[in-house]
Amino acid sequence: MTRVVILGAGTAGTTLAHLLVKRPELDGASVTVVDRSDRHDYQPGYLFVPFGMVPAGRVSKDRRAFLPKGIDYVRGEVTAIDRTARQVRLASGRTLDFDQLVITTGTLPRPDVVPGMADGALWRRTVFDFYTLDGATALRPALAAMTSGRLVVHITEMPIKCPVAPIEFALLAQDYLRKRGRHPHVDVIFVTPLDGAFTRPVASQRLGKLLAERGIELVTDFQLESIDNEHAELVSYDGRRVPFDLAVTIPPNRGADYLLESGLADELGFVKVDKHTLQSTEDPDIWAAGDATNVPTSKAGSVAHFMMDALVPNLVAHLAGEPLPERFDGHANCFIESGRGEALLLDFNYDVEPLPGMFPIYHVPALRLLGASTLNHLAKMAFEAVYWNLLIRGRPLPFAAHMSMEGKRVPEGVRLPAAYTK
Ligand SMILES: Cc1cc2nc3c(=O)[nH]c(=O)nc-3n(C[C@H](O)[C@H](O)[C@H](O)COP(=O)(O)OP(=O)(O)OC[C@H]3O[C@@H](n4cnc5c(N)ncnc54)[C@H](O)[C@@H]3O)c2cc1C
Image 1: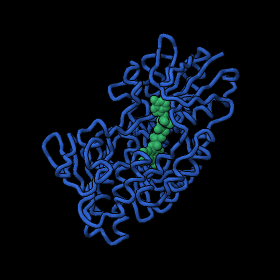
Image 2: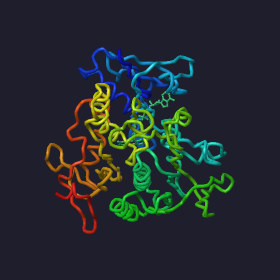
Image 3: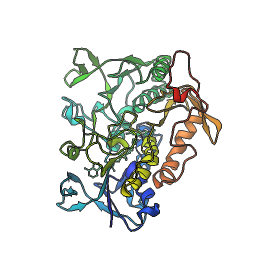
């Protein structure tokens, strides 16, 4: 009997479990899913908690209700992978044997690795994160109490999951303050290690313009060295200082600790995989998906979902001794809440940066790309129900896993690979 073990039952692990139990080729195989917690969080909901737009209680659910029948669910902390013995070790001492292993333990915010962040006197007093439910919940009263001063929204380093979420936070915060008449007294400052608002040129230029229109100051190329708790300042390696009254920071995001010692991951703990097949570059019986991989696209729930169209057939083919049939193209799409009841949409892949135009649903140009619209905002809010009911249950969504050029407009000066210009 083939034993498939999935490490992590978040977005990628849960979706994968549903898809594997539906595959007739795996009849008779055992599928075991391990997670250290019984709670499954809808992480995009964290963004809305500090603004009171979504109650914290709605974000987190019992994950057992979302796992398919026919799998074994094991609650436990993974502490090691023994590749020689083909075993996974748990903190409890229990071991799990595997023939095929899929790593979907995601990425974790690590405020403990920055001097003066988690260990500083200001942590969760005037320095907050919103990449955890605890952090987002603690931030709500601090934001509500802010009537004047400097609100600094900050990214420590890349990569982070959902790289647009900090921009969304800055835009929503500005709108939150505007609605309460506090915006003349609170400066919102966006501080990033990047050379612009976002990683890719067209989106970076458009998002930079949007921040400027909303009066949000952009501080670029800021590589955080530490947080000076005495003076309430972010300090960069080149000696620049950014003072704050309230700092909302995105700590470094890292892979799970056990991966660092596994020989399977890079120095940040992200599993080294072939970016198209999602097979480990170190071991053909090991795979990874979602935020846990080192692939050069956004770490996002949409990406975890799109990866499945390559991962599942490839794993099944590998078990049958056949060539791997599918290639993941790096497809990501991300809504960006821009406040005022609107949102933007980005759609891109490894080869094509986010472009303007319209995103089609069933070939109907439905959602505006790289431009704000009410419909995008409604779609983002509706995504919560899509997530719980369709996405993580491995049910089809109304758009393809591979990125399509349908509806996209290529601005002058943007060069695309030949495959996308036909
Ligand atoms: C604020 C915020 C906003 C976001 N907004 C969006 C958005 O709008 N759109 C979008 O597409 N994506 C968004 N994302 C990103 C999205 O939530 C993640 O990319 C997605 O959840 C990744 O899925 P995953 O399965 O790889 O990781 P996760 O869903 O994080 O799952 C990893 C699982 O592994 C478990 N685990 C970790 N380590 C261990 C261990 N050692 N032992 C056992 N279990 C372990 C964890 O408990 C967890 O259940 C957002 C994220 C945040 C934080």
